[in-house]
Image (cartoon, rainbow, N blue to C red; front, top):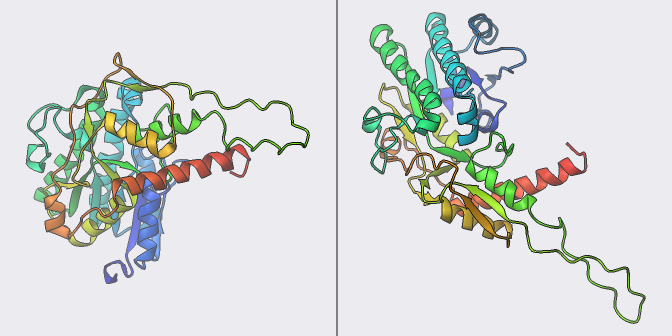
Length: 341
């Protein structure tokens, strides 16, 4: 807790999905000076905006979470934007931090930086043993350059930058926009939105009271289409666990080697689909659109370095995390439909 006393912390992306959890945990740790820039005020692709941000925030530590992210579809549609925006934000944030005299820079990479055919579990030393999976390579490589920069800056300038590699995140507050969401929120939305009625069918009036007009009983759920074959495997980290890992690394880790942040398990997309269908009560047909890309064949991280270096180990059981995420989305959908948000 004393680590954060009198520290001024700049959290880019602090109003986003992961960032909101990081900011909340910073407050719980007693951090009083947290600066969260908004994109409407600071376009982090532009150098002058970044310089102004450093002047305004005057930080001791930067936790750089801001990124342009999305699922396979979004990456395929806008590979140039995913590359340019991410590399420009990261490279300029770190360079200006170095010039500013920053005490520590925490850079978040991505599992998409790993080679397409990395042996499972992914070890940090395998990071350079091949080209990333094609559909998200521009994004993965843009984020990977932050590792190169952090190591070069530590060697030449003694700049304390660390690089973390989180696996796919999920949890309450995730992005459920079908145009840009990742697989878990996309599936949750599809299955819940496919329910014929939002509430249970009302009981019929007891005889001999007059019966109401026939109320249409729910028809079988419409079919839901899932991208790909369902064979690839993925690993998922609950967002609250990820935020804890980031802050533990900020407090305790000061080396140039990259560090995986994950939960240390893998599940096939097909098994994931079946699990989310069960948890949402979906009874309809599931269709696998095999004309769509699968993405990387397998994903699972070796998480031993994070545990050894700064004591991080994911705590949230996967099914529990899914239940919390589903509950949040149902509440969000209800509030949105009733104009409460």
